[in-house]
Image (cartoon, rainbow over all chains, first blue to last red):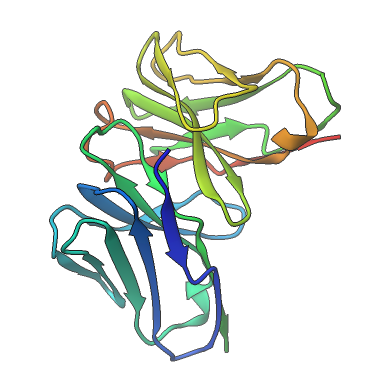
Length: 111
Length: 115
C-alpha cells in the first residue's frame, strides 16, 4: 500500500514551546487529515485539509496541505501539558475508499 | 450519544483459539473499518465495508475475517489467532461510502494479546 512518512517519531518539549511535525508521501493525496490520540482512546480528528496550499487553524493548531499534494505539516503553538498524546497524519487518495496513516508522533510536554 | 462501541476493551487469549471482537455504531453510518495499531507503524487498515454485505480487504487482511450482516455491526473474527496478531485494534465508521472522512469516528480500542 501507500507509504506515509511522519516525523519526528517522538518529541519531548518544555511547556510553552512551539511544536512542528510533518508527513511526506510517495503518492498524491486529495485530502489530508490530522488526528490526536489520547492514552487509552481512539484517534480524534483535529484538522481536515482539502485543497493544495490550504492553511487551516484550529485554536493553537495550524496545518497546511502541501502544494505538491505529497506532504502536510502540523504546528502547535505555546504547548500545554494536555497536548500530550500521539498525533497522526492521514491521507486519502482520489481512489477514495481508504485512509493511509503515518506512523505517529508521540508528544511529551514537560510542565 | 453518537459513538462507536468495541468489545472487549482488553483480551488475552491463546494461540489458535477463535475469537471475535465486536463493533457497533449508532450513527447509521454506511462505511465501517477495522485497523490495527503497532508502535511506529501507525494505523493499518485490515478490512473495510462500504455498506451491508459489502466488504473488502485493506492493507493487512491476512489472518482476519469480517462480516457486515447489519448496518450497525461489523465484527472482526480471528479464526486461529497467532502471537503476531497481538496489537491494539480500532473500529471506525463514517457517513457515506468512503468519501470525505471528516466525520470518521473511532472506537476506544481493543488491546489483544495472543500467547
